[in-house]
Image 1 (spheres, one colour):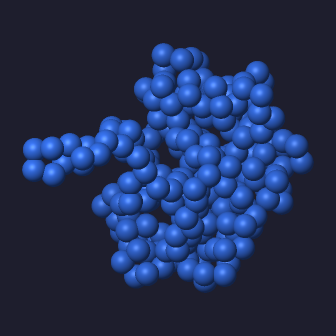
Image 2 (spheres, rainbow, N blue to C red):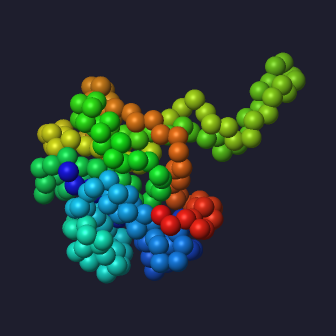
Length: 229
């Protein structure tokens, strides 16, 4: 099994933080960036080979990690212009034959990857996705008639969202060869697999934070004060 990380996004909403860095290299604390956390998680799960799927400012990623990091061999697959996550995944599977543990480079969480891998093997599905409960961005008001009966401040909702960590069997390569209109894996590959019952869900309720906005980034930096990993 190999690890892979989507690390080619522009991160336009984060340009005000540091226009010289891709989002995945933003520091969580002194000399510890988002990609360091991803690689540490892979190392803790016993993976020793990782493919970085890079694009925008990819040279800065290559400069930081080179071909090896903490005993992990690192390879780079670069898109010269934005092609979408489906293209990046097809490009990856054109180079490899093994199963893949894939992560979104800008999502930080503490999911136990070793346990996730074991669960993925147990299900026998072509793909397994970490899913997390959706939290409302607003307070939820319960109303009966014209009377407010209850007010919940940003509660967890009875829906799940994509947690940004995936296990993909090597056999998924044949599905990737199909023609899809959508350039993203959610609207193409995963939609196709879901229609055939070939995706397992791994429900996770621990620490999970996507870095989509400057506010997200500031919140996650506070969490990493005093944290080693």
